[in-house]
Length: 163
Image 1 (cartoon, rainbow, N blue to C red):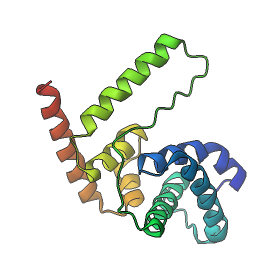
Image 2 (image 1 turned 60 degrees about the vertical axis):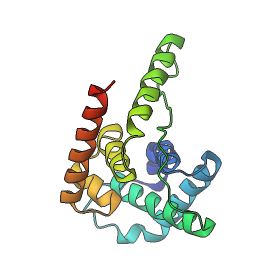
Image 3 (image 1 turned 120 degrees about the vertical axis):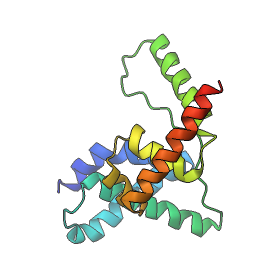
């Protein structure tokens, strides 16, 4: 496992976006990412290498988000919106506008999906996780991930046809 500093540099922004996507407010997401790395420091010795560092961090982040919602006594909601994050700071304004338009369109399509389907689509296609990583991240079996993914893609295909 890399050093905490390396992991923070590599994954902090990605984890912030993940937490926002789970429904955490942006300001709170930044604080919760700090908690992710504090928990990582406390439990680093428990990491057995059976999953990737990324999967482990996502699992910690998901558990911290659930704890956060429990503390607020709010129901756990999965926000429909995909956070807009364009890595290329040199992008031209029309490229940024096109990327935003594409994400708006994806968000519109995803609103017809269930919360579980959105989670799978987010992990599998937006974060490019494998089925195994997605299963570990969500605490599900690989079979549930595959079934949920299949149903989500079927629903999205039906939505595209009706447009």
